[in-house]
Image 1 (cartoon, rainbow, N blue to C red):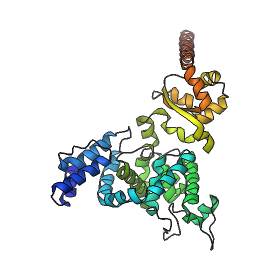
Image 2 (cartoon, rainbow, N blue to C red):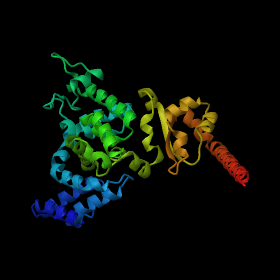
Image 3 (cartoon, rainbow, N blue to C red):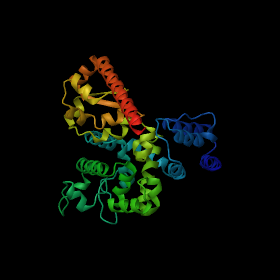
Image 4 (tube, helix red, strand yellow):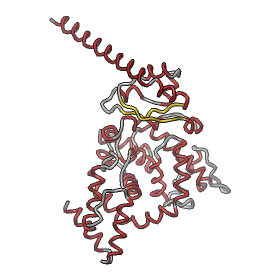
Length: 354
């Protein structure tokens, strides 16, 4: 708390002491969707990080990221506030493509720390464009890179390529913080850090990563908090996301739906002990097809955090809604039968040991 207080005072000390500026600062805090007490500016920055730690949407800021994120927001907030305005068309385009590939839209903030959203950005190692793709990687992702044409600078094409790359990295690593680290430094460095630390938790293995990759992840987290005032599944480790977010949060990105299927499907959040086979029977849908729309459904519904964003074609969702009571009743009956069978097996095993 002492550090938070000092940062709050330092931040306020940079501002002219007028009521107009006080109100301006408070509106900035309010824009971050935080429960800020506008009557007490001195505690404003403290309240911001207190709300971040508590998690307004269930995603809590890891304590080991707190110091970095605090400093990052203070140093970069003005520039990023301006970017919210001039970058709106770019963010809209990126959001649409990320949605098309079933990816979290918060990944757009990777383009902010990679290039400041500039299509002409170029690094000293030869990475180019808003997503800072290297030539070999860009070509593997289907982009033209030669003396005459460099599609890494094309916002639409490079964003689609980056979405494919991020999707493939997540399929391989299954953890968004590791994906961000691998995007910067390659999967080789991530696997090396996993071996040396004997952990797949970013906060445990971070010191075995190159400093640039380690800080890249923290910059991504800081950028997301600067723009949104809160974290999401992309600022959490896999275990953190499993503990803090709804059960389906870790699996919805594995849906393999094309653009038309995504657009025409309906989604409803359900909780309880549903079974995919029973739902499939009532909505007249092949179970394999059901699982394509709803990966790991039974695994999530069998867990303690059994909430799922059920996605179905519109006509199938209508059947689900009209048969919801029967589906749930049959699912409960199966659960009771399975419990009885388990108890019976335990009893038999107990007798056999006597």
